Image 1 (tube, rainbow, N blue to C red):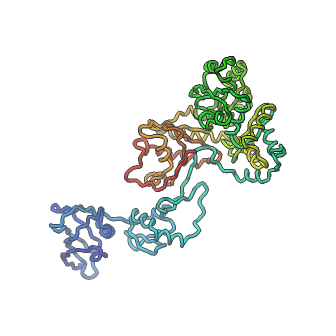
Image 2 (tube, helix red, strand yellow; image 1 turned 135 degrees about the horizontal axis):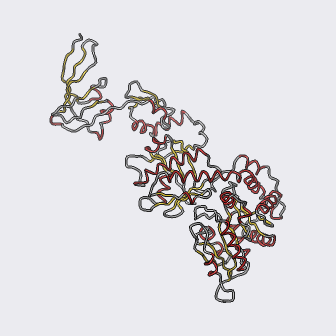
Image 3 (cartoon, helix red, strand yellow; image 1 turned 60 degrees about the vertical axis):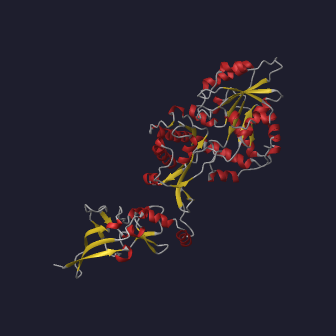
Length: 552
C-alpha cells in the first residue's frame, strides 16, 4: 500500500502554487464555500465577478512514491477573509469545432480544460465565452486574415457579412421587402446582351416593338407603349385621359396612385383627385361613385374625367379584385361616359389568382399600366396599353416626362424573357406567400396576426397590436440574429421585411425566393415567441448581427 502524508498549505497565489493539481472542494457546515469542483480556469479568471479569496488554507494528502492521485480532504477560507465564491469547471467540447465562429483555427488543448488557437499558436481556457472573446480580438483577426487571405466560397444562398466586432458570419438573408429587389438571372442577361437594338425615339427598335405588340395582344388592346417605370406609366395614363385643364380623377383612398406617387397627377399633371373609400377587398362602393361625379354644368367644380382602379390591390394585401365587380364598374363608367384606368402593376399575379386571362380582367378598362419589374423580375420597365389614338397621345407625354429612351431594346428584352419564363411560375410565389402566412398563424400569436383568407397573390401583411410590438420593431427583430436563436435554429437567418405603417409589416415573395429560403423564413417567423411577450432582445442574449432594412 502506498504511503501518504498530510500537510496544510496556505495558498496565496493559486495559479503559481497549484497549477498542476486538481482540487476538489468539500462543503462544511461552518464554511461559506459551495461544494463543487475547482478549475484553474476559474481561479485564473478571478471567478465570477472576480470573487476569489486572497488566502486559503488547504489540507491535502499526496502520494509519496508515485502512488495514488492526490485527494483533498479539507478546504476552508481564512476566518477573516470569508466571502461567498461560486467555483466551476469548464471542459472543451468537440461540438464547438463545428460552430462557424471557431472553424479554421480552434483545436483541442493539452488538457480537458484547455483549447488551442492554431492561428495564434496559443493555449486558451476552454470556455465558450473566453474563446469568443479571443476570436474577436484585434490580434487574432489580423493573424487570421494574413493566414487565410482568400476565404472559401460562400455556399449558394448564404451571404458573408462582418459584424460590428469584426467577426465574420454566414447568414441566410431572405429579402421579402418587395418583389422589386430581384436580380436578373444569367439567362435574362444573355437575352439582354443578344437583343437586336435600334432608336426607339424614332420607333426603330425591333425588340421594343415586339414587346409592345406582345403585351397589346395579351390584353386584347390595340396598342402599347414601353416606358421606364410604373409611376410614369400611371401618370401618362392620367394625363392622357385628362387632356384639358380643370380635370378631376376619382381614385381609391388606399390606392398606390394616391398614396405612393408623390401626388404626381397634381404636382405635374395639374389634375385634381377626389378619393373614395376603399373597402377591405380593394373595391369601393359603386353607389358612392355616382355621388362623387361632378355636375359638368357647375362652373365652380372641376370636371370628372377619369375613374381609377388598382388590381390586384396592394394595400388590401395584394387581393385580386373580383371579376363581377370589375364588370359592374365598367358598366357604370360606360353609363356615366367616363373612361376607366386600371393600375395593373401586378396584373399577371391577379390573373393567376383568379384563374383567368389578364385580358378578361381588364376587359372593361380603357387604359392599363403593366409593370415588368414587380412580380416578373425584369430590372426595369412598364407598359401603357390602350387604343391607338390613346397611345399616340401617351407617346407625346412620355417624351416631355423624359421617358423617351433610345436603344431601350436591351431592357425590353428582359421583359420579353420574363413574360416567357417568369410569368408561368408566378403560382410558386403565391404558394410561398401562403406558407409564410401559415407559419405565423400556427403560432396563434395575438401580438402579430395574419388572415390566410387575405393572401391571394405574393403579398402578405402582418398586423401588429402596437402594444407589445409595432411594425418597425418587428422588422428590426426579424433582421437581427441572437445567440439563443442561432443555437436553436442551427443557422443564422435574417428576414428583411418592410413596415408600411405603424401596425403593418409587408412580406413579398418573388422569383429570387427559393424553397430553402421559404423554409428558413418560416423557421424564423416561428421564433415569434421571442416577440410575443416582449419585442426587446433578452437581457442575457447578444445580438451578433443586424441587417438594416431601409424604407423604400
